[in-house]
Image 1: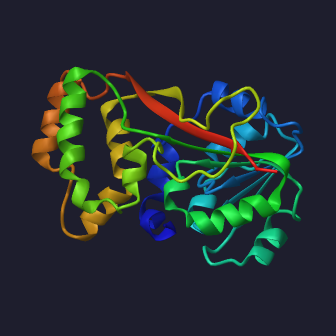
Image 2: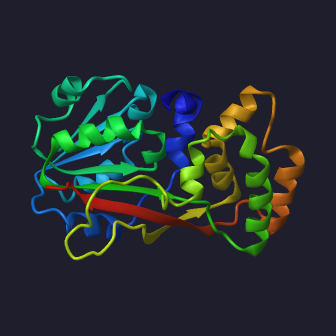
Length: 260
């Protein structure tokens, strides 16, 4: 997974949306303690920053050292580069001893994980009744004209996405998730949230350039944002590429607690 993002780590850090406070407040309300959070696939630290406001300590891990280079330093957050093949003992050494983590979070990276391996790590590190929260955001919404151009681009980009992307398109609904509902809930989701970001057209293009599919296409000699597509977006944007618009990202959360 890390290799797909090596060449656009800077774009990823600059253009990816933040997550709403309501999402983290909901997650934190489902954990009995707030001592330690493990943020898996932390990337450039978008989720870790918010977790740091609610948990005493946060460990953010990622298989991409390039992504971690853009993560902001905070006194109660520790970032660690963890190779994908790190054995369970290595996870204990890099993250925390068994049975000491209150919550494991995965923001926009769940679909890249080897789930059986990851679930074994999660069960080992979480405390009794500890919580796993994994979420994704799907395609951005701007308005009818821009969205129409976007969907033509997105549909045309499908050959360049890794198969794992289908889990995001499915909003994690059919993902194997062998955990019990958290207290106060009757199911494990997805629970729906949303986040907004203010963007001009160049910001919007930077988001598209942060796609793994964009880089894969480019490596194969295909420019997804070709001149015609850029013109279509510019017309749909209203002609002024510096006009700032509200871009909305739907978010879908799966959350559950360790079975006793």
